[in-house]
Image 1 (cartoon, rainbow, N blue to C red):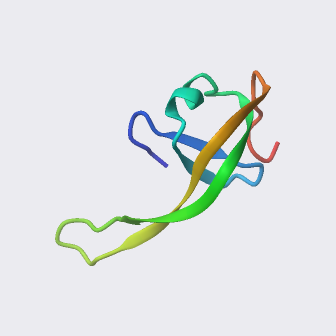
Image 2: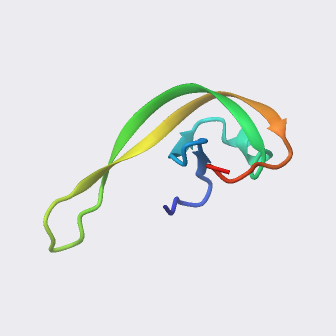
Length: 80
């Protein structure tokens, strides 16, 4: 899944990706690390309609970040 520059994605242990919102300054230093994040989960509807095509949307998991706790300097891929 591709996200615009400056957006962060957290993948949980089940392999589910969540686009993170909020706390961008805090998240920058934790890219590639294992972290514990507290906040509020939600779903955002994203339009995926191609010009001239039928209207379509998809749901995207999002997580509004309240705090970030460092766990380890590296993380393992989800499911490993």
